[in-house]
Image 1: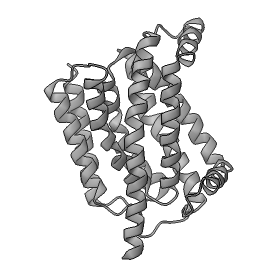
Image 2 (image 1 turned 120 degrees about the vertical axis):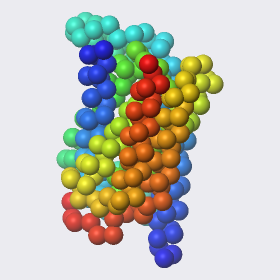
Image 3 (image 1 turned 180 degrees about the horizontal axis):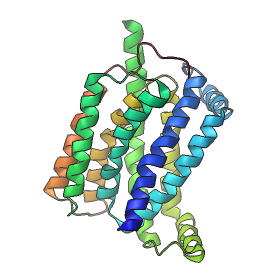
Length: 125
Length: 140
């Protein structure tokens, strides 16, 4: 149970932290408007030159290993919905670290996601 | 107004790719990890054997390929859309994960868990009706 809780925390909080860093790196290159493969590769290459991208990828890799471990112990139909709690962490992180304006409607949506996660946990009993 | 529509259209297109590919990748990942076997412990030898078994499993690599495609779509959409919009909007994939888990992996899903997935998707729909980009963003 303790091991599963550790993996769960790593997936939710370290994974979300990684995504916030990746988001910061991609915002720094500006909006991608050209969707030809070469242009996509160049855009991702520019993102890779930002230190935040590598910090983000490292955090996301840690979360991925934790996800693998958790999947070896629990059902897919439990693991993925339960980690939706990262959406609440993402909304808070988006506001605090990326300066995003999270509207009231978006908070309501996040609240629904959180209630759904609680139900998924209750459904696991 | 047209620019806003264009923004919504390309955001929706990439999110559609994300919510199609990610559940498939997640299902393959779950199937692969069941083949690998359960987590044994934190000792270095146990860790090594666990991850060695995981990364020499073909199903895991199919999953990694699918999740990499998801990640590229995710990176592109994040170049303009808010993280706090993209993240919940892409969670629509949870209903597909639940369906794939039930029909492909033959997992038993309790009614309460189905309800939880439905509530998560409702939250996603609410978020999906907000603008993908904050009107004014300070430089990052």
